[in-house]
Image (cartoon, rainbow, N blue to C red; front, side, top):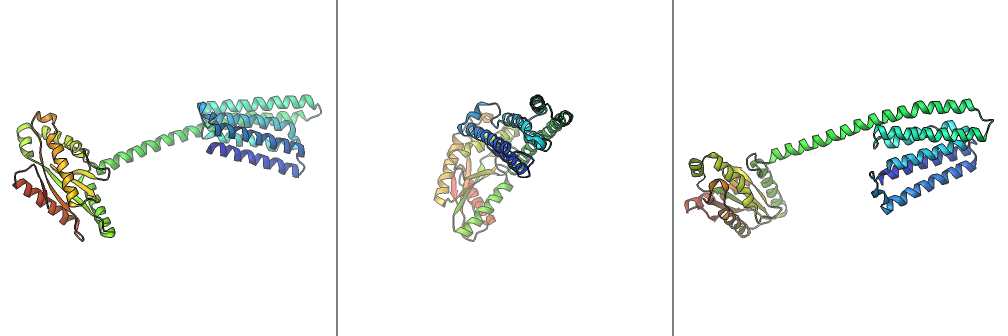
Length: 344
């Protein structure tokens, strides 16, 4: 529809030009009126095609080629009626071709250029047959100019289109690279979960929101039990495999707004916006049970458990103090036998 509106606007400029020529007596009023009526009929026809969805049956739903071809043929027809204004109206050939530059390739543009030349040549032949007294030298000179200009314009338009395509491809590649860099900046390289930097930014944002709006949030700090024993007995590859799979197990039952990531080493942090201490304890318990029930391929049937410390943000408390309370609760759970949730 945007391309259709561009074409319609350009066509209306031609209507305006026809009436200006009629006002200065360079064109008969009959030609200006009939030419404008034909242009408006063409605009209405394509409007119906777009509004009914018939354009979707074409390979190019914008119908750029069809709109441009119709405009070129209509221009050629106007040339037979234009009289003294014909040489000025010829400028609309490259104006019409310009409409296809950002959409069509060299081959399609060159084809349309030859369509325009064929239509214009046919109309000139009919004009010379109808009016023998017409200045044939001037007509042939105008046609010669079009023979040079339109193919050249099509070639340059195709070149511009190729440049635009390459620029568009480069833009997509650059955007993809930025997206990958952004993911590398916030994701842990081993586990694919959010990294410590991102988690700290989220915590700062939640604390700011809590202080401004009086909302609550809680954190759960989880540590893998006996992780050193896994590395010592089965190797670091097995330990890495556990760390890679653990975020998938932990994510079960979490909300879309919850944030889970690797805090460091074998420690993971869960941030629960809008969650009280009791809700955070329940979420931590679900996470603990999910991990305990999981089976890690690198450990055969050996289960993995975690100890989780839970703390709710207190008004005026900074992030470091909140994490320290969760950390103390987690270590209290370690001292109490591991594989449990402890409130801080």
